[in-house]
Image (cartoon, rainbow, N blue to C red):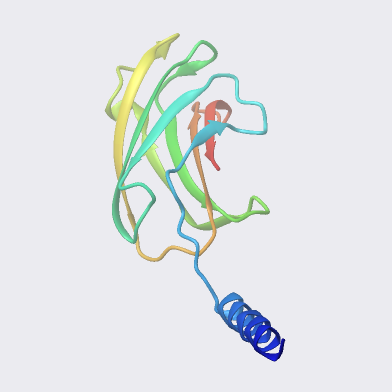
Length: 144
């Protein structure tokens, strides 16, 4: 009986010690969904490498805009956010008209942009927006 008791105590002690070690969970594949703010159009976003790393990262953004006009001054905006929705660091704006003939309405587009990230926080979300020249959101996707 004493042997069983000692075995159980030893087993519980080992489980307690192992459970006390801090573990870092690594993000798995990044999945993008429409923004919670109600995006007029949806876009598809893929990133390479996935998940993001410190250094160069490539974003491929595709979609079809049915609302609004892409005109001079329209931008693709990529930003990292914390869980409260606050922007982490500086956003990455890109001129859409550098890759798409402007003005454009009801257009299918495919954009590829590279961003350089110096350091990554442990927890973050990615938001990708297509904004018109007036700053109105035409399409938006956020990572989970």
